[in-house]
Length: 418
Ligand SMILES: Cc1cc2nc3c(=O)[nH]c(=O)nc-3n(C[C@H](O)[C@H](O)[C@H](O)COP(=O)(O)OP(=O)(O)OC[C@H]3O[C@@H](n4cnc5c(N)ncnc54)[C@H](O)[C@@H]3O)c2cc1C
Image (cartoon, rainbow, N blue to C red; front, side, top):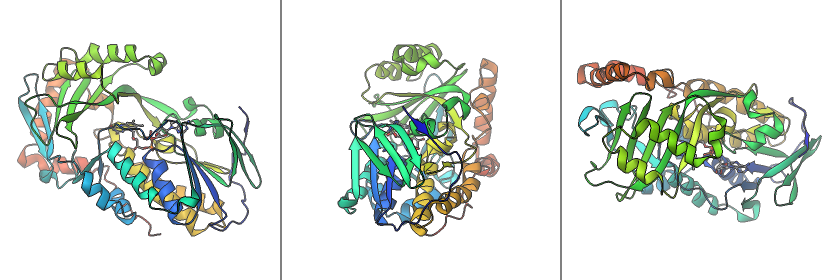
């Protein structure tokens, strides 16, 4: 693999939108959203997605404030409305499934754990892919089952080699290939330079809805050092499981599914409630997802003709609940800036970063501060957290609780109009 890079902004030559060629690495929410907006602006776009087909899976992601506004401006709302989830709020349950605290969506005006608009990650990705299908297909080259292996930049473009052996030359490469971005590694350096392990692991997957589940409610059970939950899916016959555990970092877990299952079982096998159903379903689910909780901090989002978007550039971890919001808003701003000044890519990338940073600073805050606060390790701290949750969600305390939820609110971010 070659790596020839100029790690600073450089003067890039003039381009009109029609002659620009952009390569997007990654066909997740960030990659597909930016591709959609680039195509709509008449920019030739190649998307290369490592998976051989659109990746299903992921549970509900919420759209509120700037991300809802960006989705509206991108014309995504009709597609989202068709796939919107019926999620009415979140209940906290004990080991017997008895509810001890409840956060209804309307009690928090859609600003609590459950937003007014909830859609599964896979469905949102499909809405974006459907929208891409309506663009000028002569501008689009969408490739599954391939990925970048080398980037070589010179003054007039980037030469790219793909794993398939294909090669191409582009004006700009957008790394939207997730938290473990290969584009970031090639252009900026190894992941450990930019990643901070936050102290835990998460897993998401789809499973048959167990009998007796209350329709429309996200149910959550906390035990020392871990939590597990079940969220509604669009199809009532299935539900989305979420498991989060606190653990020391273990790089060997990344590719060892048995060890991942053992870790999750070690925390949750005795959790009561629906833990037996959930852990059994984990063994056979078609869309098992497991990853470490990591935050990515880049000194700058762009290096020459490579820029980072979404989790690749500014992952705050799923604990923020803002990954998809950052991907949508980031894609909207990046494409908007490129299309505004196609003759000045350097300026566009600079403005993309400057515009986005105030939003990212707030969006990447973890509600409550850290995984340690969210998942206390001792039994007595877990019991105390339960009492606290009951109190915080009681009617008299809701205004204060709202303030705590709003403390990382990004609602006042002025989304530029492109
Ligand atoms: C299957 C899946 C399920 C998820 N479930 C949840 C969830 O339930 N809750 C939550 O908060 N977050 C979840 N996430 C993360 C969430 O999607 C992101 O935080 C957010 O949407 C930002 O998206 P992104 O496009 O930046 O990154 P991602 O969603 O990670 O998308 C990156 C894309 O790039 C592809 N890719 C990876 N490496 C390469 C490569 N070398 N070359 C080309 N393509 C590559 C991946 O296959 C993926 O399609 C999930 C991600 C995935 C991939």
